[in-house]
Length: 254
Ligand SMILES: Nc1ncnc2c1ncn2[C@@H]1O[C@H](COP(=O)(O)OP(=O)(O)OP(=O)(O)O)[C@@H](O)[C@H]1O
Ligand SMILES: [Mg+2]
Image 1 (cartoon, helix red, strand yellow):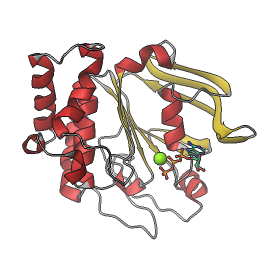
Image 2 (image 1 turned 90 degrees about the vertical axis):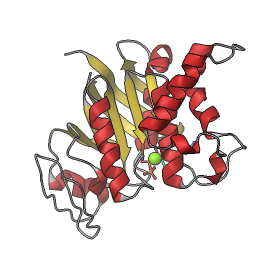
Image 3 (image 1 turned 135 degrees about the vertical axis):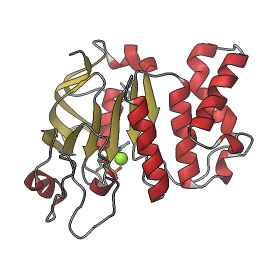
């Protein structure tokens, strides 16, 4: 099976002598649907930055689709973690068109095809009615959907999503995971979340990180998650997918 992402012995951080992620070995095969879970500050976003080539590892190697991350970045659709606060004024359709920049090229105008792709992806996320609205006027959940539409507009081979369900309600979460399952038929998906309850049954493998990779596989042990989160943990499995953390019981889809 071909590899989408391979990390070997990766150590990285922001201040020398203070690594945020340490000695991570992680292989993601093509067409995997991997959920990376771990507590706040555990290094999940940092790991995604390394995969995107935005942060160079201090030690170890990273390859994406068999090449360096900088080379293959155009093949990755990235949905960044939403940071609360206003951005500069920009309409929703223009945000999604940014996902087509690679195709438009420097100083070239977007084609009718680019606009069609942008609109099609807004409809896919059920937010086509917001196309002319200012990004700043949207709710957190709506913004997140627009950012996913932007990532998909670039027709990526790999989709990286950082906390995509953080501000969406249960029904939206359900349809969102159905969409991801559909996309997963021809796309590798890596979804990052601190919320174990948000991991859906559509996920194929799970990795747990808190500075180091605590576990990786088709199932998770209660022990490794308890160790990562530093709290007692109970797993209720549906096909190997954990559904509940003690003290943070959440209804999840099955
Ligand atoms: N740009 C930065 N400069 C310095 N330190 C940073 C930077 N970004 C993150 N860190 C630190 O690195 C550590 C890991 O942060 P990271 O954002 O990777 O965690 P996370 O697992 O994504 O957390 P969360 O669940 O809250 O999103 C934290 O201690 C954080 O303060
Ligand atoms: Mg994060």
